[in-house]
Amino acid sequence: MGTAGGTGSRGLGRTTSVALVGLAGHLVEVESMLTSGLPHVQVIGLPDTSLGEARERVRAAVVASGMTWPMSRLVISLRPASLPKAGSVHDLAIAVAVLASAGACHPGRPAAAVHLGELGLDGRVHPVQGILPAVAAAVAQGRPEVVVPAANADEARLVPGAVVTPVRHLAELAAHYGVTDAVVPRLPASAERPALRVEPAPPDLVDVLGQPEARHALEVAAAGGHHLLMVGPPGAGKTMLAARLPGLLPDLSENEAVEVTSVHSVAGTFDPAAGLIRRPPFEDPHHTTTQVALVGGGSGVPRPGAISRAHRGVLLLDEAPEFGQRVLESLRQPLEQGQLVIARSRGTARFPARFQLVLAANPCPCGRAVGRGIECTCSALAMRRYAARLSGPLLDRIDIQMEVGPVTRAQLAAGEPGERTAVVAQRVLRARERQAHRWRHHGWRTNAEAPGRLLREAARAADPRALATLERALERGVLTLRGLDRIVRVAWTLADLAEQEKPGQDEIGAALALRTRGQHG
Image (cartoon, rainbow, N blue to C red; front, side, top):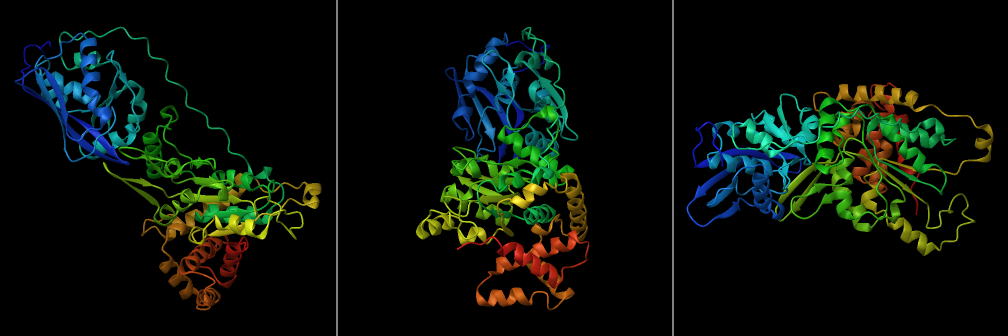
């Protein structure tokens, strides 16, 4: 290998990378040491298979960059050794540490920076997933100087305080560190930075014909961050209504935007040309989706699934009873806790999962058990089995449960459009602002996040008789305590929409009707 003006010396080379476990970034100290013995490269420090293969990628990239690979025993250590490490994001750091240990550059320069990127066999530096949370973790731990693939530079620059150095080829970085025999190849000119992607306008609520009760339930769900179940025949508009819920939600705050964007960066679904994700995401997986695809996971270090990608947004499960039983039951923990904890043999990952769940279901397998149900061809046993696919514990976590009937001939003839999304969204925004102000000292933003005990005590202080009906239902076993708390949450949201300080008996009654109207036997 070449030397950096004669200042390099063979010995220990050191630099830093970042390992992601969930969204948590951990600094990884990458050390390289030339020792006596036959030529061999050993990577230690709990690497996975792809990281163990880094020695071959790095060796080929160094040679392709015009430099000589050291012909001696080479030990590469990734510390802390107990931390699981996966993927090819550490390739660039390993290559730089090897250059420093071989005396090709002064060891102090690369030691000061964090290096992230995958190396190709020709020396090119390829983009990797999770750059945003990785760079954010480095900056938060006092390491603002980061070297990233050029294709990830826009994403890395979204982190305040980051000093970003983009590279396209290993030789380019080696020359930057003073390696004299690095041959920087002629690479094709970088494409012009793509224009910011213009998000298509969300579907408008005005397109939904009729359904005043369902539209009201949708507004209440948006205002308080409540989960929603809609039961009705095919063609009643359940999916149309659900698809319009994200348009009613306010823009994400700065912290929420960074958090949501980090999830999508790790998942590989983030377009850095569009900047931070400012609008609530919308996920609508098909009913054939697997538990891993919905929850997240996979071999090695877990990755986020649809639940986490819907964080701070909406998760729609259309034809909900058609989903697998285990898939549906896996929703229970994130609905209650707002996060996912995925344990694997190589470590435990936590992903945020504070989303609004919307379930859409037919009343029976044939979908025609509406009204008197005379057109329904399902047996009583088939109907019970179909309804049982949405278990009691899952339904108990759904705040609003609505029947959505078919559009009537009178509504079709009238053809009167309802309110537009923009009009309803303004009411939702004002209600959200009232909630954020109310819970500002607790860190909660919506009524759905506030604990039931606090809501019950405040409602009882406002009107001692307000909860009497719910308490009697609790005593009879009609309601669980969780169900009671969710009704009280909806009542607070109804009060916020009405610009009242606290809910009274009218709001409690309306919230109870919103929860029980869609229940089926």
